[in-house]
Image (cartoon, rainbow, N blue to C red):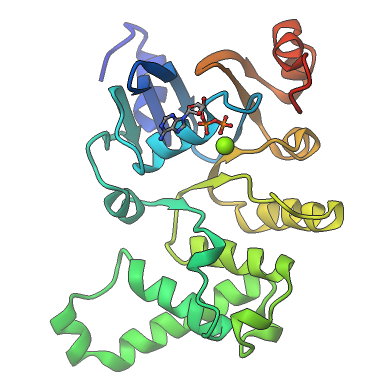
Length: 266
Ligand code: ADP
Ligand code: MG
């Protein structure tokens, strides 16, 4: 890790939840992400916004490990994870929203959450131990499942099949599946895509409630949602960070306003 010569700044860097350093992603000769360095502190809610094609999803994928960086580094919780696969990053405490298609329609809500808990528990026993201590393990898993169902407001429909859930509840189930991985940092790419204004507001409230203990990196095009939820905002344009700051500072930034002129939705 590079030092700045400022001990206070170095200490901050080493305890940051997430840090990217000079991240570059090229697709052939096209540079989708161009030298992006950002730091997300523990407990911080950071949104990444920008016009369509700015590179938001690509940056998200570099952070989660779904894509390999061409250049640069990703540090999570002080540890370099640049070359770690997504599963390893999840084990280390990076929770990423799963696509709706990952919700298993034929299973009940409870079974879906249970699968997510079992698949990703960082403190899970090894296979042998779990064979010898099934009761302890099941109690522990059941408690985790009940807690998550309660948190995301699905306890009352826990025994229904996932297929029968209305859209909003499916998104709750997805968020539940992220929580099941016991994350310290949660990554969401447009969690309210396709939602009505009411469902969007519900999701905002849910994210705020259930992620009180976590850090959040949110890619989102709904600017009202971003303004309401974020501690800080990073603005991407053509793969570069053009602004970073509080919601108020970003809303009043002339360069940000320019980037959105020309029909791109903010
Ligand atoms: P955003 O999420 O901000 O809308 P993306 O990260 O999806 O933007 O895309 C940024 C740019 O990179 C776009 O021009 C897109 O066409 C390009 N891009 C994204 N993924 C690929 C890929 N796998 N191959 C080639 N180009 C890509
Ligand atoms: Mg995108």
